[in-house]
Length: 253
Image 1 (tube, helix red, strand yellow):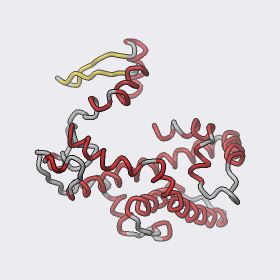
Image 2: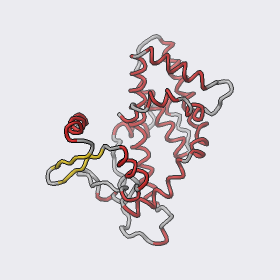
Image 3: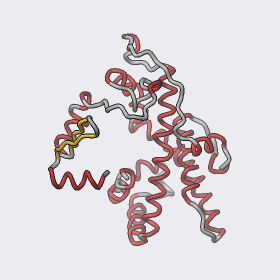
Image 4: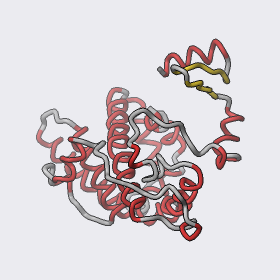
């Protein structure tokens, strides 16, 4: 589908339309218009169309499926979780998971045999999600048989039974219900687990098959980060422009 979009954009321009059955679809790739839609006038473009496989019982459950005022209310409550200050506070938890990952990878390397790095990245991702989002040290990197990890790999799309009132009470304008909390916990899991681990695996593969770029990245990181003095790896990594340019396509794949 992405190849079709690319060809159609070349042929018809940055704004064009097509039909999916009887449903008209408008495709916009003009940067100025997208800037207006996603930032300046985002409050008017927060909703999305209904998908065929959406569960009707979880329509109001979490941020991804919520619409209109319900979406705005949930976003108002959840958005501060991802502020720069909050992310900085999470750095020690992320660093702890990174240290555990590096220890496991070193052990595997010393065996001198090929191994599946994707399995380790999935455990690392799940470990990080549980520690940052839920405050739990699951140590899944040392326990590949953890029931939560196995269940997530077996059926990451298992629905949560979420039913909420469609009417938004005035008293709930800046609150989030228990059902919505459950729904957004579910969202954190499905949105963060496979997407992050797959992107990391792909980035690792690209770096392994392009040693010159890998060396350039390593030198660039070393020029911005001193492991003996810089404890906050997240903030040090923020200023590494080459790293940002290199990894951005992986997380859009």
